[in-house]
Length: 67
Image 1 (cartoon, one colour):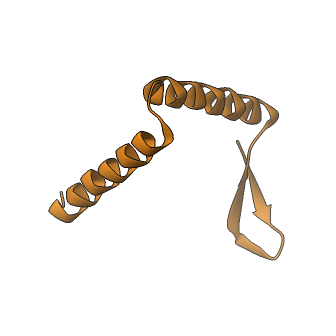
Image 2: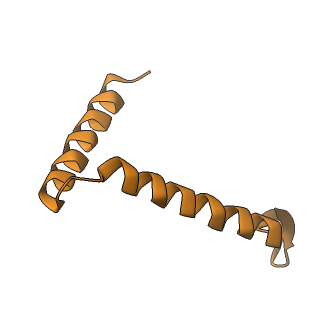
Image 3: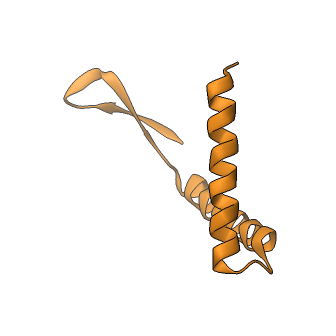
């Protein structure tokens, strides 16, 4: 990752991925997609949708409970 000074406002630093960062991002994205496919293997689309809804409810409950 590189930090670039914004030419319009020198107080601002813009972050930019390096070529190595882009390669790492693509690799991690591929791994995440493979893991997602493994997790939902054997579930039809309705079951996957139900799982997503249930997980969203769990997350909302945790958010509401606070730290």
